Length: 399
Image (cartoon, rainbow, N blue to C red):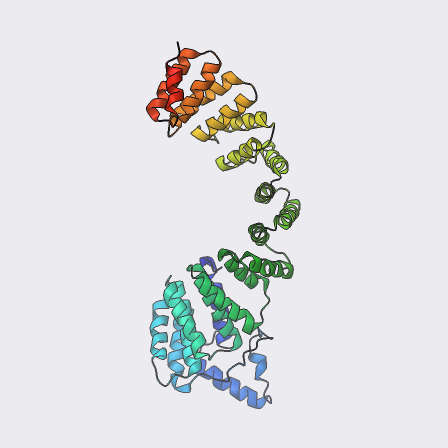
């Protein structure tokens, strides 16, 4: 994706490709000098050309040069851009775009620099409009043409025009024949956002395989696509490999735990999370909730639920809310620690949206022979509202 702190780098590349690999001081003079040097050297002007970024491209590069009549206007536009005077760049570019004497190259270059100026002033809508004009005028070399196409696709995706952006990227890859991993990952992410997981997987795999050092978030995206596509086994394998590669990376370990959970391998998920807890790496509420939820969904792990919740509350990481107290109460109850369960239910019930927890508390209190407290809880249940009022009234009417 495009990031703001990379703006100038993106622009520098695009300008260089548009005007022959260098930032010139005189656009017309450069054209004439190149022609003279070509004549003197027997046509070796390729020495001054920028490296071809798309050697396998199917597009035939246009053989168009800057119009001599527009030399001063082109140079004014280029200078303003190099000086980061973007409003002046836009004004000069629009003047060239409206000039009937401008050829396809002049207009393509003007639209390209206008797109960069618009992007640098946070006007993405205008940047996209100008990039479309670059492609329409079709006057730049392959470097400038395809990098403009790539930037258009990125901007479309960034602006939540994912389907349009993907179509632009498909055209880009089909015509440029690029296999750059950092570009393929953009397409893979777009396919993922469109929930086309089966299509995203081979693209992401190609990007990862082609990178000397693929970024961890690329692997995470692949894991997510595999999981969404129902290929849980392969997703787990990918998560295990990433976690093994980064044993001290908390995010990699949490991703592994999530993959184990999706694969319904709760004991393995718990082991990963508990290792993080033992080393003091669980520092967020959602992480403690995830761990005690794993234990709550695993047989005979009530004591582990209790330990995790109490530790989280003691550290101030877990908030003393309804769900926490309810999980604590149930775990105490099913581990035959009824007094502690009652205490937790007494804390949970006032936080409940209805009276059902009070009614459950009343039943437990009654079974423990604590009738006065049971009657009081039943009355509170009726006051907050319960579906089965008869049960509450039966407890209230106990002799």
